[in-house]
Each structure stands twice: as structure tokens, then as C-alpha cells.
Length: 304
Length: 128
Image (spheres, rainbow over the protein chains, first blue to last red):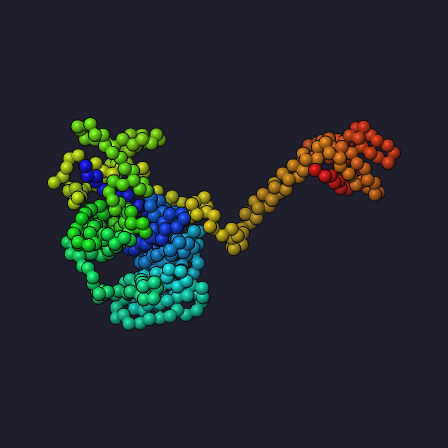
């Protein structure tokens, strides 16, 4: 019997969520940071979506946000012409890096010693975080504003994109029904998830290119999609101001999702029976209905 | 085709959102032990007072515990004019104004029971 995906909605932002990033797996689990046009990036526990704290300090929309591998530092890129580095444990601001235009993207190196920034001034900058007063190394070459920049090949190369499509020798390409804004590859390279202008999320088999699943759930275009470091869930940020967590394997017990086997002998619609004592049946119904997308006229398409 | 028997995946609860009051990063959160202990910003008047109060309370508690530890032990008192006496400590009164002692060894003999005025005592010492 197929189970319907129950996305977990993380509320708290008041404007579109434009960027998201997960940390690596730490002894305390993994974490998620979200960049929002309301200027207040938030840190959440990665497997449950629980809010941990909000980084306060930017004076404009935050376009990019990232965490270092062990989630001890966060970096944000904003429309106030600065990139900021934060202590992700205490929430305190560690440094402000002034730029000459809107900053759109930030990325830490694996060892957290350097920060890459890029933005509307068309320059890539590399800051040595051990010497923040020193001038950053600047790399020019882009002819329009930089939208995204990432370290790759063990921090030996930088991959960056501006308004014109940048491709790194395409090995695979996937057809999607609508304009895609963001995609993420599963850590084990089994799946790819993508989301864009039609408010839907699509899941593709990486090897065959077949569309496996698609989900409606957001009320606006999807700006960013990321897989968690363990590949068990993916997060999507939207124009509707919410962040949603989706299971990679629907029905698996993980984080806040609890697998339950319906009664075999019941002929009618089986109501999930949960054994934990503190939750009343009514409470569960409430939770289920809050999460089920009852507003939609059609059900999410699920391809087995 | 939609199967009428599909159920949605049950969840334990919804993700917790911001509390609307603070910026978060709770001191009792999962990673509390990783936080730096000493704040660098200068403290406000209010917190200095409460810090002093906490220090005073801690010292008071230590003193009261030291008195408890003294009960039944041999204590040496240093009084005025270079006088030293020893006795078995019994108790103190509420204001620590007098010490009730027994077997007080004085230069002119042993007193079975006595009250030592604390204002007469310069210092005292004992081994727990």
C-alpha cells in the first residue's frame, strides 16, 4: 500500500526563502540554514526542522547562506553589500566583510579557513578567515552579476554562475516540465531533486533520467532545493516564505516521520495506530490534517 | 489513478518554529557545551549586583558549612592580649555572636561549659 508524502513545513520566515544549505554530519546531528529576503537567516536542526536561532544583523535581504562542515560557523550574503561570518553555536556575528554591491553567494572551504563570495559587482573574492583585515583575493571574468559560486575538486577549483548558463561539461541532462531554479544531487548519486517555477518538486532517477515522483506543496515558485548530508530528506525553500522537508523514502521512520503499518484485517480506511502514550488520537488527526495538502484540488502525483 | 486506501505518513509533531521573543541559540540546547564561557562585553549595573549577590550567597553557604564541620571537634581560639585557648566546639547562635563550647582549656583551668563571645575572638582554627 503506497503512502502519501507528508512534507514538514518550517515556518518563521516572513518573505521568500531564496537559499538553503545543510552542514555536514556532526556529533550533534546536521543543521540547516535558510536565507530569506526578510534579512533574518535562520538556523534549524536538520533532521526535524526545529528552529534553533536567528542570525540578527543584516540590514537587507539575505541572498545566500551557508554552514561550514561541522556547523560551527555560518556565512551569509546580503543586499546590504556585506557578507557576514557568524558563530553558529552562539549566534554571534564574528566578522562583516564589506563589498561594493549586493552579495549573492558565500561558500566555506572544507577546512573553514577561506570564504568565497560573489555578487552583483561581478567579482569573486576569497577571504582568509584567519586574517579578516587583509584584502581578499579577487577574481574577475564574469560579465554579469554572479548568482552562485562554489568550491569544488577539494577546494582547488571554483564553479560559478551568472545570468548566462554555466555548464560543466554536461554528463547528464534532465527534461523538466517547467523552468527549474534549483536542483540537488543525492549524496550517493541515486537521485536528483529539482524545483522551479511551477511550484512543484520533481525527483529523478540519476541513472535512467526517469521522473520518479513529483509533489505539490508550495504556494509559490521554489527557489532552492538541497539534499541533507545523509540523503534521507531534502529541503525546499520557496517564494511563499516557507521551508519544507520531504522524505527521500516515503513512509520511512526518520526525524519526525514515524512509520506505521496499517491493520491487515481491516476492510475500511485504516487509521494509523500509534503506540506512544502521550499523544491522543485527536491530536494525531489534527497533525495529519495540518500536514496533508487538503487545499489542493488534485492529489500529488506519485509514481511507484 | 488515486488509490482510496493511501494514507499520509504520520508524524510525531510539527517542526518547532521561532519563539518570537528571542533570537534563540538556547543556552540549554544540544550544543551548549561548545559555547565560549566568558562574555567580552562590559556588564550592566544590574548584572554586577546580581553577580555580587551570588558571590555573597556562595561565601555564606561555605561559611555555614564550615561551622557544621566544626561541631564536636577540638578548636583553637586566638583571643586578645595574645591569649590562646582550646575547646570542643558545640554550637553557634543565630547571629554568630556567641560560640557554645565545652572543655574550655584556659590558663586558669578547664571550664566544663562556656560561652565565648565572638567579638572577643580574633581567629580560630581546627582540623576537620
